[in-house]
Image 1 (cartoon, rainbow, N blue to C red):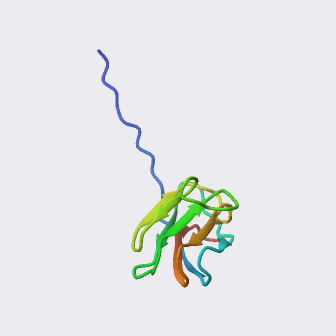
Image 2 (cartoon, rainbow, N blue to C red):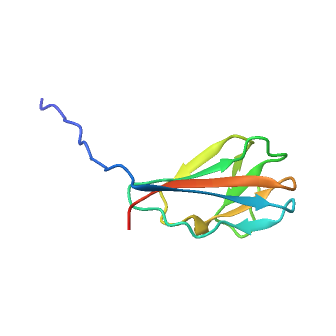
Length: 108
């Protein structure tokens, strides 16, 4: 029986990082995430700010709901391997929730 050897993929360290936020001023209003390009082999991380007064719903749908979204409580995060953050819509269940976006960036 032949042994299976793991494949190791080397990904170089990022040269920069994007960190930005979106304030969801009005409760239950849908906001589009901004255009943030995510390089190959990196992930977009979406974080519900600690201390948010409500939950954050993240969806590809035009109207996020608990049936088609990832729901983040304050301080929780979720990550995706996507090309751009602008494919997502977000909604805060209370006024003035904040969503933080971050991802590593390759140099110019």
